Image (cartoon, rainbow, N blue to C red; front, side):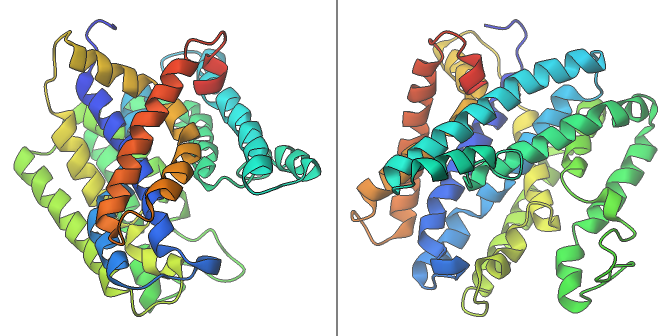
Length: 350
C-alpha cells in the first residue's frame, strides 16, 4: 500500500477502464458491415446506456495530466519510466494479438509476421483500441516542451489556452454548416486553431484542476448532465438519418464540447471525494487501478469470448452489453492479476 495514496484518482481510473470495456461491448450491436449503422431499438438504447462511456479516454488523459504535469524528472528519466511502462507491454500485446488472429480468424503465419512488422506504422496488427497508445506516446513526447511554461503560467494564461481549446471542441458541429473554416482548405490541414486541438487540452486541463481546484459539486452535476443529454440526444436523433458509423458518432467524438462537459463533470465529482482507509475495498481499488493498463491491453480477448457466450441470451442490448462488460472487466482483472506474478511481468502488463 502506498502511503497517502489518492484513492479518488484510483476510482477515476477504474471507472474509465470499465467505461472503455462497455463502449467496446456496445460496438457489436450498432456497427454493421463496412461501418454501416445497425438501426433499431437497440441502437437507441446504446445511445442512452453507452454515451457516458465516451468520457473514458478523456478521463485517462486528464489523469495523466493531473499526475505528470509539470515534468519533475530529467527528460531521460521521464522517458525511461514512461516508455518502460507503456511501450514494452504495447509491443508485447501487438505480437500476442497477431498470434490470436492466427487462432481466431485463420490468419497465416506470413500474415502474422506482416502484422508484427506493421507495429511502427499503425495500430500494431489492426486491434483498434491500440490507437490510444500512439496518442499517449505523443503526449509524453510533448511533456518536456510544455512543462516549463506550465510551471510559470498564471491561472489566466492557462484559462486562455483552455478557452481556445474549448472553441475547437465546437468545430465538428461548425463543419456541418461550414465545411472549411479559419483557413481550412484541401491544400491546408493546419488552420488557425490547429495547435490547440486534440487531447492535449484534456492533458493540460488535468493539470489545471490539480493546481486550481475543481468546479463546485452543483456546477459539476449540471455540466455532466448537460453534456450527457447533448451527447445522447444528438446520437439518438441521427440513428435513422445517417448511413455510416462516423456520422452517427458525431456527438461521441472525444474532443467535442459535449464530451468535454461530461468528462469535466465526472472528473470533478469523483476527484473531489475524500477516500481514505486501509481496508480491503481500498486495497482492491488501488490494485485494479494499478493493473488498469494491462486490463486495457488485454480486454478484447475476453470481450469477444463473452459476446459469443451471451449474444443469444437476450435481444435487448441494455441487458447483454452490461453483462458482457461486467464479466469482461472481472475476468480480465483476474487474468492480469495472475500475470503479475510472472517474472518481468511489467513488460507485459505495465
